[in-house]
Amino acid sequence: MKKLIILSSLALCATVFFTNCKKVLEKQDLGSFTADQVYNDSTTATLSINYVYSQNQPGWFGNVGGLSASVSSLSDEQSGDNVFTRGTATIESVTDLGNVNTAGNYFKIRTINMFIRDINAGTLAPAVKNRFASQAIFWRAFRYFELVKLYGGVPLVLTPLDAVGDEAKQAALLPRNTTSETFAQIVKDLDTCIKYLPNKWPNNADYGRITKGAAMAYKGRVLLYWASPEFNPTNDITRWQAAYKANADAVTNLTANGFGLYAKWDYSMWTTEGSAGGSTPRNPEAVFATQYNTGQTDIGQNNSTYPNATVPKYIGTSGGSNLPTWEMAMAFPMKDGKDAGTSTKYPYNLGTFYKNRDPRFDQTIAYNGCNWPLLGNNNYRLWTYYFTKTTGLTSTESAATASGLYLRKGIDPTLTLTSFPNAGTDWIEIRYAEVLLNLAECAAEISNIGQGQEAYANLIALRKRAGIEAGTDGLYGLNAGMTKDQLVTAVMKERQIELAFEGKRFWDLRRRKLLESTLNGKKRNGVTITLKNTGTNSDYILATRDAAANTDLDAFYTANFTVTTKTLDSYNINYQAGVYFFGIPTASIQSNVNLLQNNTWGGSFDPQK
Image (cartoon, rainbow, N blue to C red; front, side, top):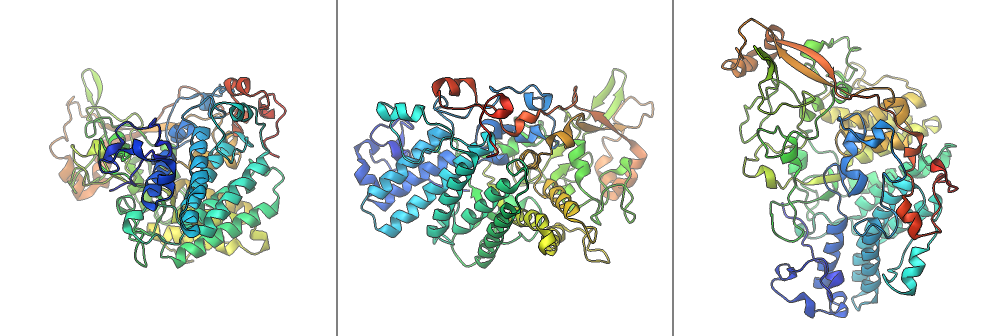
């Protein structure tokens, strides 16, 4: 899967980013190019904007560096020990504000601003300039949104201030803009993108570039945050209405241009690349995607490490990460869409916890005895049980999963032992499903003025695609006549299931100010599957388990396994109220006396204004 060609042509005169740039420009000497030559020619300008993409595209789990690298372990999706869940975070815990971080958001914003300045100063036709500049402007909006999510309002720098001299001094003393000003600038930049970006890029080679629909969907996400309780404590309904319109417009545009729900909910949603050309994308779900290939040495063409890190350790070279919790597994409803324990058609039983679940359960969670095609073997079964030996319990795995479960979402079954470490599986930052959920949440929030049925319709569309049964009422397990609050809760539950392990859960709980009420005082759990003791002190089903599971997994479980839950955390989760807006780190304040600390950390800056 080919990723956009990447070049540090923003620093052509001093190749500070890459030293072997010749490879990218087919052995041309980049040092011989001047800025005028780069930005007066569409070919070299393309290479320059590709570098901007390479510096900003999110990776798996929405990772854009810093805190976002481990967001799954900050919620109830997976277990993870950190200062946030322990309740010991300080102002030093998130350090991406100011010029002290040379690999952070402001470093990247400066590079983006340089591109915008230089492309506009060039001699390309106005329409071509707008096409290039609007892509860079999108990434500036993207970076400022990452900052405002962390801290609230931040200094807005819209020109490439010099790194030395008087401008550097000015940059070092910029005060924070208000949060409302920061959001307004983000929306302004996105409106510029929406005006100039194409609905589709003409060539397949341009797949992965930002389209008008992607910018519209991202604007919908931004305004959803702005309307959420974290930023909207008085619940200003006009913010929800603005977010509703932005997401409705995004759905309209995307649908008109061939985007929609992928036909089936399985791994192929991630392994099928979209197509910029033609009337209908090959993967209509991929609204905003980061491409990967399998190269290990090509500049900027990174391999995806997600599959290798996620599969069991005895398959990948560094596997066993991203392990789902029991809470995440139990979030999935039964096959009729009703919660486990409340369904009358499919009664839940701990001993066969996997049975008759929402089909997305089997495509997200890998459990003892499940059929999980791997290494090209469609009949492969995963075994994670323990059995008794004279020395105590022993796992059938060579390196046992800590939670008793594995994440299987988006894992390509055709990968081999050789290709796992260098997989090319793409990351989809915005799926069409998320846009529907964003719209559903806004519709639920303004359901008292007639939009409730739209929230129902979008939830039903997702559940129908997933394979949940319609039921006699055609509501796919949803309750009829839900109130506004019940409908919002239903949307948030659907987000937890549909977008599991896609880097959304922590931020959803945070923007809805639900971290404390959902997680505090609790411990995350896993599951242990134990082979029933027959006195043999051996793995007595080793030779027969696959055949028996193929015949009747339920009967095999009942006859041979005991299922129990286990605690993973050694402490009760204890989120602090201050984590809804992180503190400004000491080094940033020391380097800029005009930076005010958030009032949630003892300062005078109100991040909700």
